[in-house]
Each structure stands twice: as structure tokens, then as C-alpha cells.
Length: 277
Image (tube, rainbow, N blue to C red; front, side, top):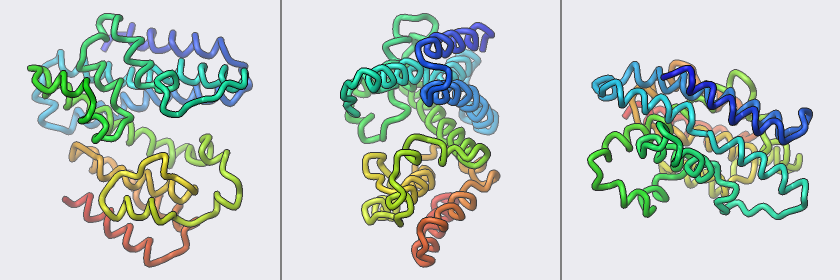
């Protein structure tokens, strides 16, 4: 990687911060997303260093992978400014709109900007936050499926997805980030203290990552993070997860909101099984 990569990331961040009040929650989110981008690169470098199939790749691949890691959330800065302006102006925000989709925004920002307009970077930026079923059903996936770069594209996508999750887990444990995000802050107290919902429990029990639109309580949000184990792509990611005792941390937190010992034991057993195989 080059020093210029970090300078460009900081330029996008600073341009966004100029457009919002310095004491606003939006500014705090922008600050977090800048730090998060650096943390994702750090986590990704650890996975790279402990994964033989990635180590066997050449320097060009590793440079592309590191840029995909650093710039995976480049659309977050513009996305949050758009959300801030929409709320300020009383404009309705449509969750499914590309206008507020950081993957789409990031893809559009970088697709005409060398050296970042390489599909091995762009695909990860565009799709790292989507579930796999949506990725495989997309026109863009069909277009790259027969590409000679297909293997590299998917390896980098999986690397970014894993590093992104590890960075979020790190923030949750070390910075208490879960109780400082918008989902937590906007929940009414009676909902905040609600136990796991049946729908979210069923998704986890079926070995699926919990979908954000199905979250109802903070307990659901905690189980969503635990469900990420079903979407880890590299053994090194599981090793980092275990070394940092993220399962123990999240299960302890979950027990404060969902007081059903049988459910907690079943969840713990499922985690151990998923991490083992």
C-alpha cells in the first residue's frame, strides 16, 4: 500500500465532516467509520498473514486486497451526509434505496478512479455488506462469474467480509460500540429489554446469519453478531474470533437481556460446533 491511499481516505472523511455540525451524532459516526476503515485493514492484514492460500498470491493481489480493505466503506462518508441532510430537510429515507446504500455509493465513487477501479476492489466495495444469496443473484455476479479474475475477486470479497466482521466485534468488545450505535439508542426501553424474538432464534438455529430487517430487540442484535460465525470464510478468522473470546463476551451480554438458560446453552453449543468444523 502507498501513503497516498491513506491520504485519499482522509480526504473523503474530511470532506464529509465539513458538511455536518461538529457536535452532531453524524460527525461521531463519521469519526467511527474512519477509525473502522483502519481497523478493517489491520484485521485483514492479520488474516492475510495467517492464510496460506492468500500468502501464495503475488504482490499485485495483496496490494489490491489491502486497498479493498481500506476503502470498503468509502461510501459511508457520503451516505451519512445524505442521511443527515435528508433528516434535516424532513425527507423520507427509503432503506432499500441506492441513494443511501454505502456499497453502491462507494462503487460509483471509485469506478472511475484509478487505481481503485479494478473489479477486485470494486466488487468488494459494492457487495461486502450484502448477504450471499443477494450477491449470487445479482447481475454483477453473473458478469464476473466467467472472468479469469473470478477467483481473485471472490477471495478479496471474502477477506473484506471477514475483516469487517472482526473489526465490528473488536469495537463491540473493546469500545462498547453496541450500546453506542443508532439501533440501541433508538429502541424504546420496553423493547430494549425484550428477550430474543422467535424469528431471530429460528434463523440462528438453522445456521443462518441473522438479517438486520428482522431485528426487534437488543438481544436480537447480539445474536446477530454471534451468527456471523456462519459467514466466516477463512480458518484464520475463526482463530481470531476464538483468541479474542468474542463468543464468551457476547454470550455474557446476551444473558443480561435473554434470561433463558436452555436457549443460551443451545446457542453456545451451536457456536462451538460451527467454530470446530
